[in-house]
Amino acid sequence: MAVRRTFAAAAVAAATVALAAPPAYAHGAPTDPLSRAAACRPGGPHAATPACRAAVSAGAAVREWDNIRVARIDGRDRQRIPDGELCSGGLSAYQGLDLARSDWPATELTAGAKFTFRYRTTIPHRGTFRLYSTVDDYDPKRRLTWVDLEAEPFLTATDPPIRDGAYTMTGRLPAGRAGRHLIYTIWQNSDTQDTYYSCSDVIYREAAAPRGGAAAEKPATTAAASAGESGPADAPEVLAADAGTLGETVGGAPGVPVSSVSRLGPGGWPVAAGVAVALVVLLAALVVRLRRPATPPPGRPCGVRNHRAGRRRVW
Image (cartoon, rainbow, N blue to C red; front, side, top):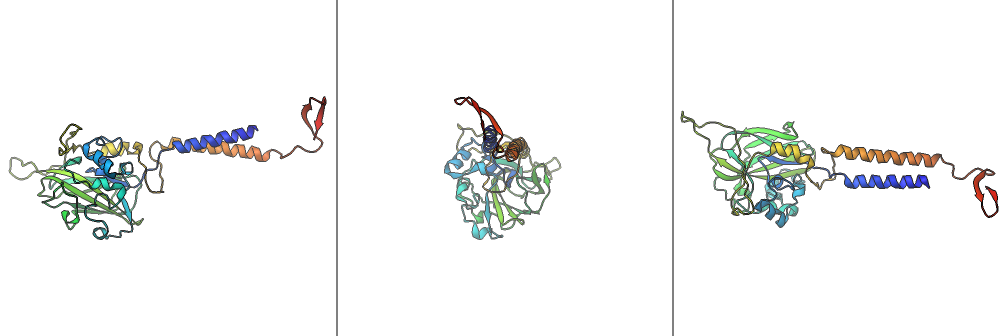
């Protein structure tokens, strides 16, 4: 009975640890400039903005902010992803990200400057990134369509290096842009059949002209401001670059990936240790159980006195 109780307790402990384990994190999304899904992730600094609240209400699985992926596209993005559904990748679970709004959290950039793009990876894959810019007459109050994007990417990178948990790609931002625009990122995997889609809202400012008169080449910088609930619906939220903070906290973010592939993030090892301890207890209990004879040998006193008969019982 004691062994059975030990076995049951260990099983309950193992089940409890498994249920308490954090969900696996999956795949990735742009963090600099910040994508809509990453900006609206639960617990993030922009989750309470009007645009993010509207996206969630309209259907945006932002708990799975790093998993906007479609299988078997094979480079046929313009044929397979419908107009007006580019930010969601045509997935109904993310349709709220396609809302036509001019108050999405946006990263402030300097047009024509060099910039280091960061794409947070929660499960690394091999593949090619293609980054597209919206055209000059882009209107954020209309749903994004393919004609709103330049025909060719302004930056392409295959298997870029991973630094501090993010793919890093250095390139030059499109020149001649001003005001609110959008950078559309396509990540086509080569080790899986998946392609990922992301929309990053940006606000371009003109490069500051030095005293000599030539345009100065300065790295993109950002400023932080909050739209707030009481602010006007079309007041944009201009972000500081979230790459560093998201890179540090994403392991603790409550992400729930669709993928069956799992990977331990920060904080996952104590859970794994708990599971290992529970499994060791179960194994020890099973060994004791197997070593114990099924029945006492014949003729051996059982040691339990029959109180009514006043004598010991023999097996």
